[in-house]
Length: 473
Image: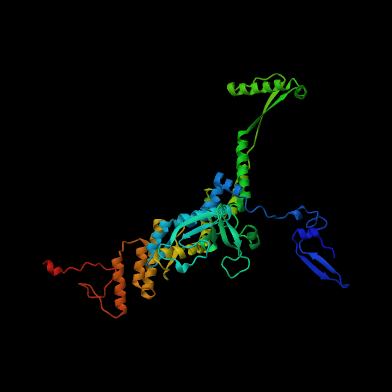
């Protein structure tokens, strides 16, 4: 049974058919035309084939990130937008956790880890604690002060030394089991090293890539090269906007003479110098002068298309990557920005939250001595709202809080604590404690009131006793 190897190379799906005599005929799906050659070996398109390029060309990625501002924007913008407004913790110990974040520089550490992961395809944060790095990290043994430092390392500084190929129940399946610090002998168990994900790879390619992900910059470097080359080519053409052409009689004969080459060169060097200094062209009667201008029509459109391809490869709108205003009647770019922010929000929930949760397990325990059950956080809004948007949002939140209080879904202390943590109002701990005491008293059926009040204590009321108008008389 003979098969069409050209069809197999084109990736067409084979179909097997059994004939009456028992032989098997192999056919391939796809449109073909033997007259025009479309879909056959005569079709040049049939030889198009995607191939896997080099995954870890560190030098090229470093050079692109170091020298080209577009390459830096491809990597930096998503990380900056995902970490710029950071996050807000809820719970009683939110302020202490926030102070611990600032103490260890967690925001900067996270930004650095995801940046170098975007350049190299692999980076992470090493947790320096009072436990042995070579042994598994035991969270139950983390106590106050156990965390000493956070260090972000990229794949050029730390390398996997053993892999987990056989245990799919482990969280590091198809990933590194242990690492080794490059240039040293220190072995690190994977539980101490929190890996920042890069661009995803199929499992087989990830194994070939030493357990790391793909570089975000590598995935759009070819389109970026085209844009940079087009811009450089246009800049070079500007320097040759006009080409001077001189016609000389018997030029070919003179050039064939060995003793005339230098004289011709000197002749036209002097011609160019005179034209530049005096703006005069002194020529022999047998010579003619002509100027050929170069047309730049259509170059701008070509460059714009290449910029759009680069923006698409980087998954960023033109307004964010290049700072170019959106084209089109009535197009303000808000739709592109909204889609981009939705993508960043997805990265926060899928990548950053998983990354930060692993660090929080150690950071919070080292700060508080335990992991409170009410510890949770939300990422802050990506864009900076206007004053009108802030007022509308505050009004909507106030109406929602009032509705939840009427439905008795949340206690008053939860609303007061949320307002205290948001920083909108100056609320001290004494006021919050008094509200919580009032709630406990009400739950126990006690009647609590302050001096001068005839109703139950209202946490939002003024603490100053009301004055009696008759006393002034």
